[in-house]
Length: 226
Image 1 (tube, rainbow, N blue to C red):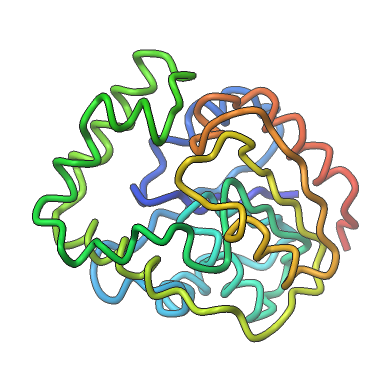
Image 2 (cartoon, rainbow, N blue to C red):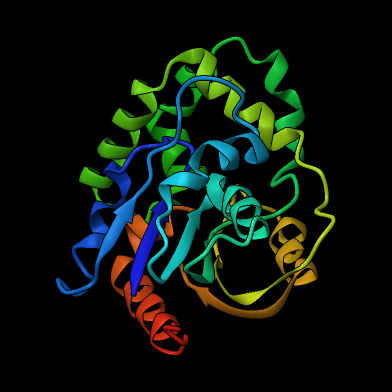
């Protein structure tokens, strides 16, 4: 069964490399990079990515920013979708401080500061290489795009419908970017939810890739292929 990956705020495939290194070579993995133009809210992004999913059986993984996007895609009931995995994600506004985004003059400069990344995103649990990679990914983001994606998170509304598919939520137990309330939003709107706590920061796939890969494989193995 395919594993379709939706990246976090960076929107590219780069930060999935640690996870890919621990997945079996035989597993078919497809990474959908996020459109850099146009509206960045989850419903709009879902409309533009829907036709890229394909129809053979697959599991959809939404990391952080892309959790609400994965939810929106699942609501459209695309053929082939067998389950959804949320990693360090949410379905409501992840943190109240996002309301300050319109007043921050230089969010890119703030987010790529070494000390802030270590404190809020990686909790001191990442290697120097991982920290550098995250910083480089943030530096690549145009100012307008980063601001648009952060604003879309601030404007997240409570979902209206429940997902009936099997859902796995990998919860970062040391997440400083997503509040407990936002983490719990998934349990309200996923009727077949399995939650697995992982001792790590928000960037789980980068700091705990081996554990995450094991849990992901176990979840996929338990899904029907037809």
